[in-house]
Amino acid sequence: MIVDSHAHYDDDQFDQDRAEVLKGIRQQGVVRVVNPSSNLESAYKCLALAKDYDFIYSAVGIHPHDASQFSQEALAILRDMALTPKVVAIGEVGLDYHYDLSPRPAQKECLAAHIHLAKELKLPLILHDRESHQDVMDILRVEKADTVGGVFHCFTGSVEMAREVLQMGFYIGLGGATTFKNARKPAEVAKYVPDDRLLIETDSPYMAPVPHRGKRNDSGYLTFIIEKIAAIREIDPGLLTHQTAMNADRLFGLGLACKEDGL
Image (cartoon, rainbow, N blue to C red; front, side, top):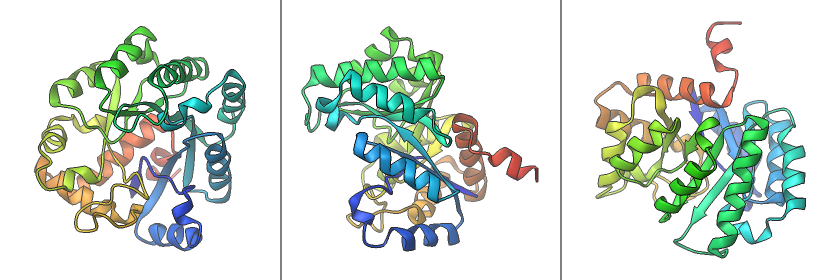
């Protein structure tokens, strides 16, 4: 019962074989996928995927790369989208100082507005944080994002930062980077995070794990991530799979607890 807590099947890299890929990951034991958007166009595609596939759930938001597209009109549209069945979070939102594809002030304004929306609708946040740790944490504190929580997807911070993130009520998502050579910080964090606060993800089609690094990623590769993290934590991969699935269900409300109980 594998849950991919973060993938982008609306991405155009899947345009030629999306249905085939999604059928394949189901056959490999993936029972739920959370698919966040990156902008308004992406959000419409995410809603369509969630409607067409019973195991896909969506999140709506504007990625920091596209923060220059943010406006109050766009936020109003996202708010309406967020009321749609199977929208389980606000995201992917945050700050990205690696590429700086949108001006930093626009990224900060966009993030703060999405936190307000998440608090209004009582939905968790899916956060993107790349080379922007201090500013992300400062904005979360000021906006009191701990009242809704969420997940730091593809977490790249230190154990010290992870400790503060956990204290604020957030989950930590780990993916392909934990399998990379010399991935010291992800390995340390993978060992540190409590059993009930860890999520696993692919970030498909990006961040494919070793031995498929550099290829198009999909949720079928989660087994490599599970095996690596389980080895780091010195637990059975099956136990990790179950723990992370239940964590995703607790955060996003994916209906797995009922499924597990046979209801």
